[in-house]
Length: 182
Image 1 (cartoon, one colour):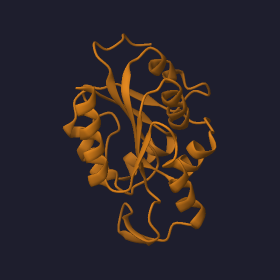
Image 2: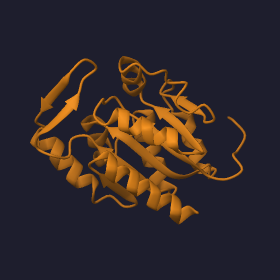
Image 3: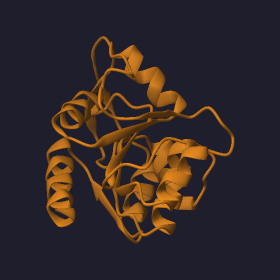
């Protein structure tokens, strides 16, 4: 495990969605002190959209979903992070978070962040009944299922979790949180 940072950082988890991906990457690049956590699908999607997963945070650490026990959760135990951002968050990830499943790196760090009283900000991809979203080669219209919309609504009731529905809301929530941790 790497040396503990001088001050707590922002942990950012990327899941396998192209919805708001470019906007999320823009926000990440504007921030200091960010470490990335990729789900397996998140790392694949980053590449599909033409990005190098290693180049997004040149100064930050990168963790990939490669081990069954998700060893990076220990970083939350020792206080390395003041906030977890999960953005973009697929309907699959949101459903698992709502149900308390911790079987991926992203869902495991979400659970452990909560247990360590580290606030989370989640950009849920399936938050509105109809959406135009970028695929790697075109714009696609999607109609999230009722179950996906219900999971997003349920996640909004989780303690220490702020759920946002747009990149603009995400940016504002992060700015507010960074001001709180000063």
